[in-house]
Picture 1 (cartoon, rainbow, N blue to C red):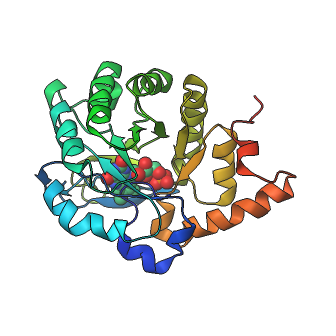
Picture 2 (tube, rainbow, N blue to C red; picture 1 turned 135 degrees about the vertical axis):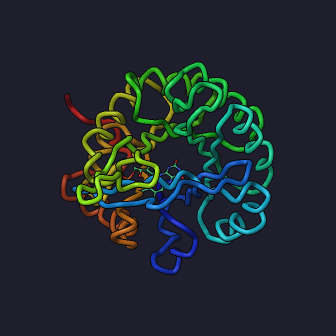
Picture 3 (cartoon, rainbow, N blue to C red; picture 1 turned 90 degrees about the horizontal axis):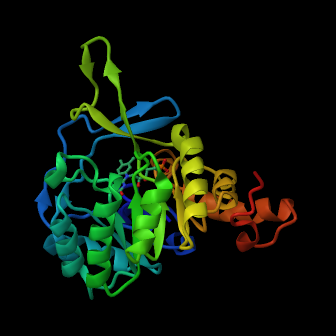
Length: 283
Ligand SMILES: Cc1cc2nc3c(=O)[nH]c(=O)nc-3n(C[C@H](O)[C@H](O)[C@H](O)COP(=O)(O)O)c2cc1C
């Protein structure tokens, strides 16, 4: 499936969407937000930085204009929700219940305005509050997308599981910077952004492996996956599904190539099904 914020329904014409497992929307907030100042994206060695800042049309506009485009496709829709306070997450869940999503993905990498701007997902107690409230308000499974910016991913993964999450996605982008030497300025308007793409893959793999050992619920692997071989590495490390973000920007056909490439790759290694390799990594 595409990673949140890295796909729009308008790209559907460019690839066989029906071959994907699901579509994930960009994170939506209950309120209208404008996002961060330009520049919002820049390239990095083997990846990219973004400080999009989650501009949001608000749930009413999202339900009227954006969601129908996803629901019109032949694959399940997963709605990513965010918030700057615990109550904002709950409000988003309230307003989306009964509107046709197959699952909700709670993006806990948003800054918590009630606690000095640290990401909600860095504190297990806050994660548990946010997620249990969303689970109580949702009529569909709730996935939780973790921030990699923590000391113990296992601790946060367990908090999400304890709160009733159906699955966890590991992980969001990694805080990073880019400097323009000529102008002696930060390249991104926000100063700091999130690093993604192949540069982060080894770290995301490590996080997936640690999270998969910590919880019994499925882990969705995300971070730098560009090829079918990358996807296989994440499956071996314990992921049961895959999200692809940055690769879509350079190769809009990347997800289809990954889906189609997995079968031959598995067959070449003498394995017939994806479920045979999940978590079978020897360490
Ligand atoms: C331009 C851009 C926008 C993103 N927007 C969101 C978002 O709205 N919500 C979210 O949870 N993650 C967002 N992400 C993070 C991706 O979903 C993904 O977790 C991250 O990029 C790592 O995967 P990748 O290396 O395959 O890109 C965004 C990433 C990029 C590059």
